[in-house]
Length: 308
Length: 277
Image (cartoon, rainbow over all chains, first blue to last red; front, side, top):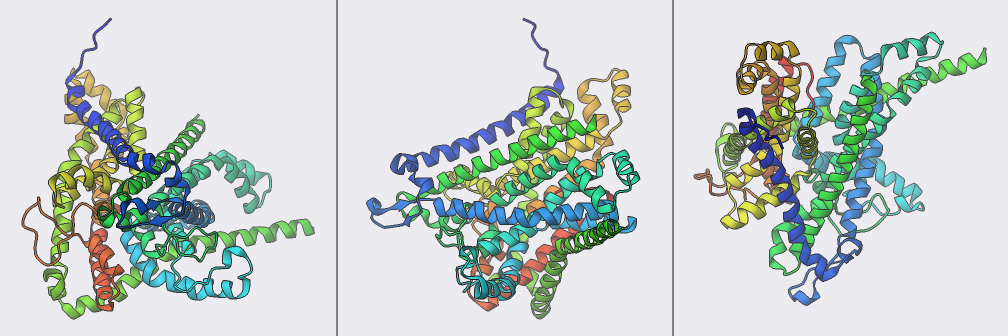
């Protein structure tokens, strides 16, 4: 067997790489280890039951994260549904129709939105967006269409899945836009020429070109979903923080991350709450890991195909 | 020819829809900036310079501002060296198994829920130390900073022409010298962008600080082993308070945070073409 000669370069850089890998593994193990007592005590009820009985008598304590998991998925899906049309439209507009001078301005705006501190979205969401949505969207819909289950909850405060979803949509749009715009820019010019020379209208040509970047749109949406699943402070300021499990858009709810943000501080008072919160963290960890891996994998596969 | 008219009509509708959606997408940014200024300026004008220096009960956010800068500084100190080394490694071995895994890991960490980092650091540092501290917060922020800087480093170095590499190795330099003496300095502008983007991100993070720094708003920090405050964390606390006066303070603090963000962000944009956060 040949002994590989380590050169100076590897001696300098490898420790950092190993450190980062170990850190990530350590993080996963910390969540697993700390969540174990919850699994032993409650089994899968931790994830599938909607109950939150905090009590000073340990035997009466019982917790289930179903409402938080539901809220996380529900609000993120609303966010993605809002982000999808806007980010696709933005990409088409910026690449195809924006005047050359404005193109860069649009890109800067989008980048700025992606980088803006999330707490600023949070304060704007809580004080401006929620009252606006409540007044102009929730109340009219509730008044006229409350027989439809998703509109059936009275929007008394406005803090709801819907508000969280809209805010998430605004926050993840620039992020999805960046991925889709880059992909749309990469469409070979000959395809555009071919489409136009067939006499297609701009709408028809765009439709064909969009088909070409479909995988990139899908992975952009998946990555945006991953990002909104993990969003904490902005969401926790607008979702209402209550243990609901409802399909009604206007009902207040919880997300895993806002639950951790809200309950972690006082979880030490109780005997069995902390492991449950770690179990929630573990769920978030694994959802985030899987979603991002799929998104990254799809995007890379598409990029590879395009480059040829 | 009615078929043509329908197609033409669809085309016009399409353009209109695209334009409206695009403007709908970017409208929030203008509205956010405008509301932060409109709500933030009165409170700052009212309190004057003391808003930046006083403690919270005296109507200022001085300790939070200092705390934020301490956290930015400490987290760069911890995170940047690791980030640069990892980024350089990922550049040097793009096709090897470890190199590819490193890149995937970086991308996952880029998207990672930041609250999980906060809880992790709490259980690793804050609990053993038995106190919240600036150093714990800095560790959490360093973990968030690291992938941004590493990914940008790697991409900045990938843009260097291959001939430079060939020429450097052709001179008979060792790999260490080629990379650290020639390729890294060549891409320093791209790397600097990555660093600034990382800092902009770290300056505005709230979730990782929730259970690590503790918060300190009534006196200035004295030690990095003790709790500190941070502007985003302060805003988060103030927004949740029922008092109107606290909300006013939150808007003022948001304006300061926004200005810090713009201060870091604008130089990046003036110098460089494309930035992805």
